[in-house]
Length: 207
View 1 (cartoon, rainbow, N blue to C red):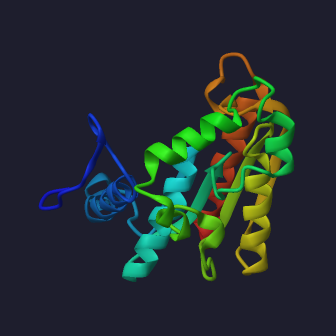
View 2 (cartoon, rainbow, N blue to C red):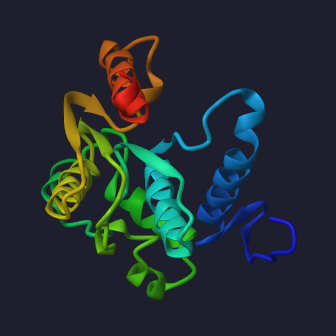
């Protein structure tokens, strides 16, 4: 971001909250330029998978903090929404060799966060966030994944706050299955379903 200095983590990586602030910048650029493409700047969806889902929620929280969020829907795929590595899914799959391990996730948090204090920031740990007034949020989780229960818990958190949306847990697939479209039918189906969910939400009364 021009005019902003950020502490480097290693090489070209930045620590929290650098990445989510870059997402906020992209949303602002998109909102100002999307009209040039013949699109509607009032209909923006934000989403991501894994760390990207964490960033999507963190960016939405930052946009709302600034009072300028144009985001009308969120698509969140097997995201890291909490920092509890003692959930049932961590216990079941954390040492199993199926994709992410508990050690992996601890390492990722260590590399991303500047220090333990960041765990108190809801932009880093969305389970701590007040999500009242959030846009419709559609969650998809992998059944064989240490982060499965993060999606389950965050879905409950959203619905308790009155946020519209849904959670789908895709049984029998691992973290990262979204990228296996050439081999896994559930990946193709999930992407199509999420696309419909976001499209229907953005289209609203035009349907």
